[in-house]
Image (cartoon, rainbow over all chains, first blue to last red; front, side, top):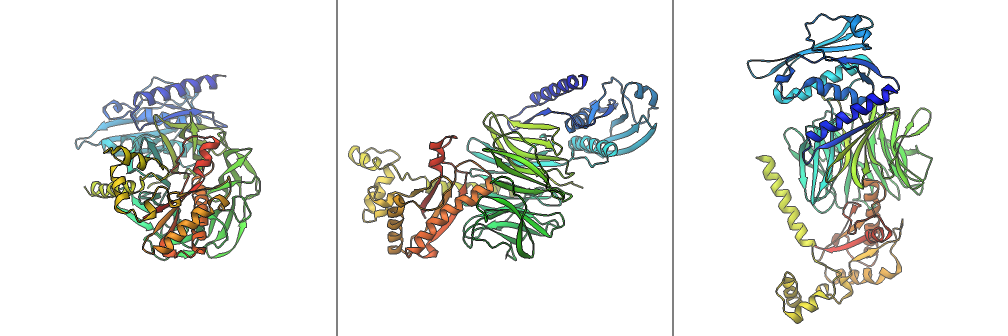
Length: 425
Length: 173
């Protein structure tokens, strides 16, 4: 009962924050659901944090709250990393863990950010980190602290400092944008009057590959997100689409129609070394590499309707992977290679499903009717996908156990084609 | 700076292409009205073009060549009987004008995945391309591409909009 009430308050708080900082391209986040077990944690205010451009503990609390894995214990305390910790006091307040820290402006304009994490039950320190952060990187520093808390307390790497890319469509303009995983800190990678689809991150997180219609046909580009350098990777006769990076980043699997209907090919990241992978009389598209790079999962209509298959990168006979339902598309493999996420049409609804690749067990995760384009978080615990909200394209994030859901809605436009970045060093 | 200049190139290219493809193909009455009223509106240049190249049936709004959209049934990728004559007329024209090139743009309705619909739109464009090649048109004159569900002519999620978008367009270069 009290959990529900707490969550409502927190959700409203998150909404309020989003509204107050709402600009035209801002994504608004709603949260629903709680994790199977929530770790009670107290985050004390960091003395000096009001001197930084953003309040670090607010960002950390929002991150932990959104993950669904924590129950934040309210407190009015401000404790620095040098404070003496009364474990028993915090334990009595219901906090199994406690984070403290400090922020100090340095003479060169940077901020010295220090943080410590304690286990109140075991009365031990779990972590201590310090950062020399540029003012514009305060948000990133906060996300890294949240990542560290998540990892130390759940054993799973945090994804708060990762990024997402997606395509917005407002009026006549399409934009490929990159934002923090919480939808904040938006940067525009490409603007066009023609559609942009299928962005995917390179394994090192420095580039995205995408399909642009700027030449009045689908053509594949890669773009460096730091230097903004764009490279034409595939512009063969016909359509060029569905890029997927090999795990080492040296090659892309792509879908081309240069030889007739859509088939899967491999091409070097510099556009050379084209090699055909699949050979069917119908459609083969949406290639994705397994994490070991040896297998490509793809969508094919060789049996009639679209189903998911896999094939060795050296060719050979493909094996069918999905059998339930007459329409299964958009295969995505979890970072550990054990789970397949895909979109299935059942009773007229296009929804997100996962399949345990060890035993074939299926689970429906989404509840929309036009859900699309799933993408795993790099820790494999969340999936971002495209959905609809009030007849507009919106994004949603769901935990792979189906318990926690966030929706990211953009005011006054459509947002589609999400892709989650890898871990960035 | 680098970013700005490359964006400028993209935009100007896109605008040029947009200008090329904005010719209305289905509006049979417009040029006739322009001639009778002598209006100097935006349609003026089209009227001038008609006069200049009156010998070219491609610019004759009364010609069957003015029909450049081929519609498909739901979940179908074969050319319906009613569009045979249109395809044959374009084949005849392209065979007689080897210097002319076309792009066939396949489209789908908005149900289903982005990339799978792109492949389905290609299937429609490919059906038209194959029919033209069977009628003797050189492969060099044709490029079949797909817009999938990305550039719907009709907006909305009803049968009328879906039917309008299940389409392949022939675009002369």
